[in-house]
Length: 226
Image (cartoon, rainbow, N blue to C red):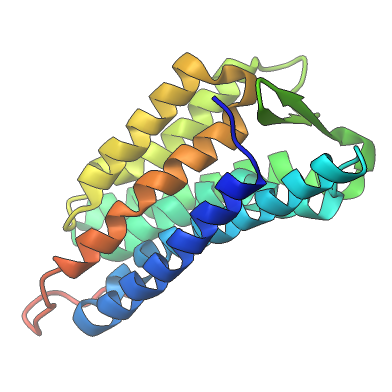
């Protein structure tokens, strides 16, 4: 499986406008979905950052630390927080809302433990190439204590569980698509899981634009969400 700057920039060029359209539709129909509707655009910006990283690798042979850190900000920190938070925003059931909010807090703590050390220790972030894909060779505080497989399973749970459990319009199907992208990453792309999974998840996030077009208009009889 090969990717390139062109693939990353192309994904960004498609997803950012889709996300803007999805947000406009959510704003008209049900503002609780605004964060979820922003996902295609956010994935698009993440892919654009990886496009710049590809360009730095294709040029001098070094890599852009800024582009790598920008990409990993999404991968390590934002997605484990924003995904359960988006489910919290659209969910009506109080018990599930409490669970999703708790997962967002856990995701923030977990994401910070992955990302923050990279900001203060430049030598903890390395970039390589394998089979035409970018490999983020990050050193983690868990190295030697917890296996990479367990860390990825925890990450996948924080991302997939809120989407699969959410009862709001279209969210569960999006969760199925994201879970399938995780499974494909585990089965076929463990050598570059971070890069390839984010690309696959970005691709399936385009579904949210369709879901927002089919979003039923919120009525006054529905319970407000704070």
